[in-house]
Image (cartoon, rainbow, N blue to C red; front, side, top):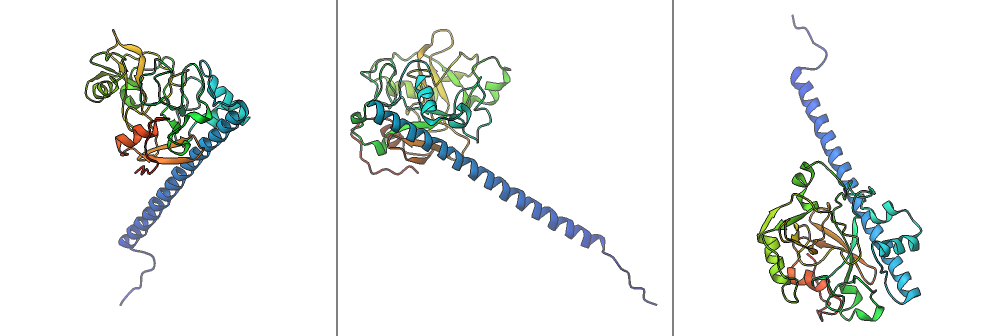
Length: 286
């Protein structure tokens, strides 16, 4: 006599569970991708708003924002009539927006040593503001702001820089004299002769005349100029960096924003950092 059994077998149950798990995984992945895309869009919008504010200031004053300490950022904030955290904090970087940490968006200091305004070649100067007519390379191919991963200013557990070295500046094996033409040597020392990320000396990248720079392409480690005991702390390498996969968002002087690959050609990246280097406007950021 045959008895028909109702219900499901163990194999059928396992198949159902496997299908549910797969669907949940796909759903979670899709949600995560959507969240990442939304944060990148918001980051681009933040930079565009900064660009509009900079141009409004330049039109009304004849120069782009400048001033001591963090004054350029305060000028932009006042022009935007928004909150500090929203305007200068990338949503992809949870460290940014804390008043004890650096900002997400920094001014471009160029490709030269920072000491003298008459030698500097980036958007940001230390003692005066750039005028509209100084961008002879073209405003569309000159960087104004880029992303930089935030780092705390104040005390923290020693494991923080050890676990997040890309957010901090490394000490190097020797001091490179900050003389015109020595930038290439400084770059090579930073690339090949880093000695430690600890101990940390306080570094405020949004202070007057600092910002990020175009010495190294995006998402590389930055450096002090020398070791902890004898470093020239007025000269640093501060690469652009972000948590967006593969590169950074870059705001140009004309107000447009482009995503630049971390694998961008180094010579092109250098060219984007200068206001009057005479480079071509035919660029490929990938």
